[in-house]
Length: 188
Image 1 (cartoon, rainbow, N blue to C red):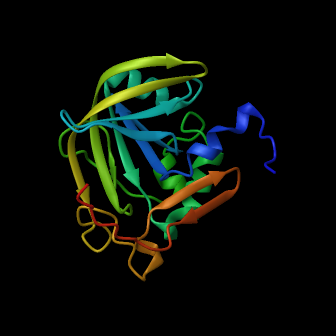
Image 2 (spheres, rainbow, N blue to C red):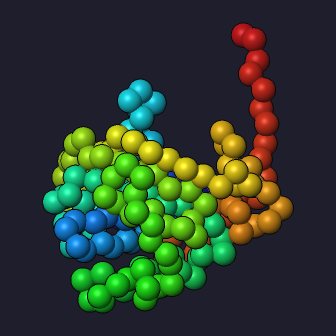
């Protein structure tokens, strides 16, 4: 027998997804925020999307600059993920310093990368869609980088758990993937 889940929490059934820091910069102001509502949406061209609420400071930076970054933290940064979600860049002069992370200039966009993260993607906004209480920013990936100890065409999930991406289960709960499972193609 299954237990009924309130529709407002059904997203948690679909998205124990990889946590990212969404970064953005416009003029002299940069910021970042944690998010788990992120997804690839196209191979060619390479597109991904992130859902950001308009009340978030980062939302206006993305909307006005036309760019965003996605920085993927490892398990050793989970306390910084939590801290970044507790403070707004609108309320502090330098959220990166406040949280203890190092911004790096983007290689191809104005959106900062984050040095301590396992991977960074830089995206140019190609479309945005209002979806209820969030804006879905769709970005063309114009640059990407990853720590080779953590990623080589897929996440490696090494024994060193700090090299595994963090997943958000909802509320105060996070996880890391435990093992890779290879399932070869069958000829049918």
